[in-house]
Image (tube, rainbow, N blue to C red):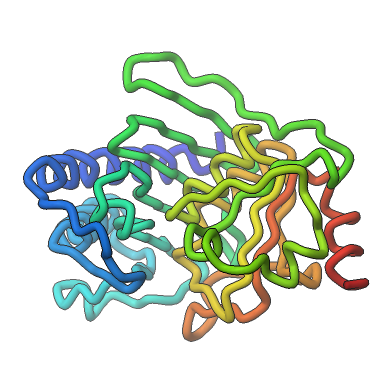
Amino acid sequence: MQYQRELEAALEASQRAARIILDLYARFRAIPDAPADISTEADRHSQETILDHLHRVVPKDALCAEESTPGFAAVPSIGTRMWIVDPIDGTRGFARKNGEFSVMVGFVAGGISVVGVVLEPALERLTYAVRGAGCWRKDTPTEVAVVCRVRPTTDLSSATLIQSHSHKDGPPSRELQALKPASVVAAYSAGIKLARVARGEADLYLNTYPAFHDWDACAGHVLVDEAGGRVTGLGGQDILYGRPGARHAVGLLATNRLLHAPALAALKAF
């Protein structure tokens, strides 16, 4: 299988990080009102662990990650082969100790997400994919991985949409009003949201923030694609990774593919 070595490196890096995270999580005192931009000791230790493993396995690859890691300052952050890492995606879920956080490790070749691992340490859920080889899930560390497929929902009015908790208590966004799904659920981690679409646990993921970064979507992007879904900007734009600044200002829409064209049309018409 193409990218077998990269998949093995991503899985091992995420598992090593998860062991460190869970040790710190067990001793962490919950912060009920944790802000959106919170960063913890666990974020930093997780990132150092992931980058250290990846750099030892593939020392010539570029490394792009959310946190500042001085020990890897000399390693390029952009390249035709590059790793994009979010050491704890959904840090508010970690800080509030509700289990809604993930480790995200993605590998990019020529701007395309080709390997993705989303590991939910507190829940022991693992979702991973390799472009051209499918998306796979494990709900316990000892079970055999099974193939993930998106749900076959064809009507927006029957769909379940997943979005950020930050939108839950306010008025519905303009985009949500346009889509009119049957139900809306929330999670802190973008990785978890994308994994839930890939696993068939939600039909759409909607991100309406003014901007997001490569590490927010890279690992989860290939999960959705390989499970049969589609990921674009809110206007149908392709999402490419590894550009200067690692920043996107087009929003994000991930669907089961069947709903993608209707969703884009609804967003455009509203």
